[in-house]
Length: 156
Image (cartoon, rainbow, N blue to C red; front, top):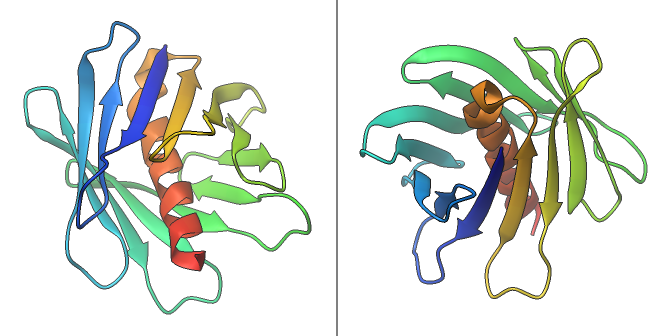
């Protein structure tokens, strides 16, 4: 299953539309005013299905992920030279990517690929393709990608 993650062009807060392979909107992401990033994820019917919330005042970036109101895990960035290093505690996922942080793979607890994320360059706004192996993992892969993107924005 492929998801196209596109940031909205004119928006005061983080705002994204997530499209399915058929071009229809699968998820909408809206940022909320808070200290640190707080992103609410809505399905195609406008129902809140998830939240990505940055924990501030930590040594390394950290995000709490929620499916509806249930905490599903904590995404943490780890210190590493010349590559990305993140883990999603609670699911056992890790990421392996390049120094530019535009292309990376998300791996499950057993080491198998959960999703491949690639940034499309030469676009007006941030645009990513998330290729999810198991459609049941789509929401979690989206949350992971949103947190990594938010962390990169915080550094800029």
